[in-house]
Image 1 (spheres, rainbow, N blue to C red):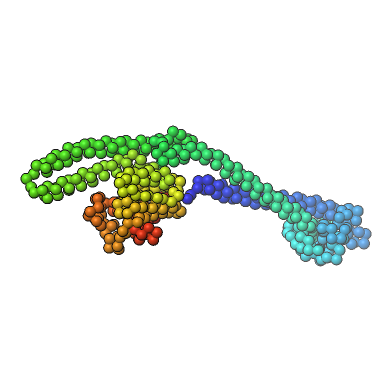
Image 2 (cartoon, rainbow, N blue to C red):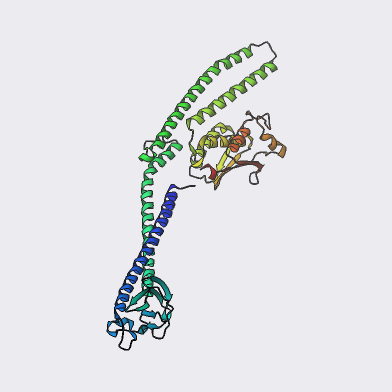
Length: 442
């Protein structure tokens, strides 16, 4: 079953993940870019200071004035280094390099290059190399700084940002879920009223819900009104049909009594006419019942006792004992009238054939299981095969039209169920077992 709440939460989650990932990526890149720009700016300032300190001593040797060198360049492996490469290949390193040999290269005058390399103690260095010309000297000045502390801070920032965004996403998703559930609670009244309509307690929806679902609830009310009008017209038509058929049948009965035919022929005509009258009464009664409670759910614990009482009154002279198990007390997603007709026909058949007792066993799992047994004579395999044929009766001496089991098969087939006949081990008579799927009916 598809859930709107799950779809909205899933969509929001995907959107937040994408949006926050983009935000995290750009923020990290921005922080890294700003950090490196700051380092390059500092390296540029140090390079200018070192450039000013370059001079030739009285002996004609190129040196850097000690007093103008920042102390950090004097500390071994301090993370701050410089190197001068003169045009004659001579290299002059900062004291901080100690005995480490840099892999910097010469850069043409007025050109600047930036790159990364591995320095002392496997330090990650960011290097700025630029070509200069001073006092007829051409040289390349490379200034480097260890950026591992900076990278560590950036990684820490990434972790903090990631955790913060995850928490923010969770808070937003949970808040959205709460808002959705609170909004869906407004539909509970509509859902409850629909259940009441299904159980026959209401005829229309009184609460049409929030604005977003009002078109649906209004359309449901319109369809319910239309259905009620059709049912009312159906009942009126049935009443008119019953009244219209009553007079011709009575007239035919009168004319049969005055026919100049033998008594056996007259009796045969009367029996056939009586059967027609019974069939018409049966079908009219069935249609009236169906039209009165259309759409109502079946509740075994509430509906079966009334059916049993009706059968006990019909068969009161035979004193039949009708027992049942603990009936499920819940509304099942099957039509009330369909189940009463199915059970009514099966029980009527059982009462018709039993000697003294009938037992009803009803259970619900993923299916509705109905089992009806009697202690009658039972039936052979050939007789069971004949039972399912419309209009065929096993014993012509028994009353009835023979349509009962055929109607039962039609109802079971409509619900994609199964029906089986067997000899009852407990009672000795016929046992009829019906299984109707419930899950696919929701």
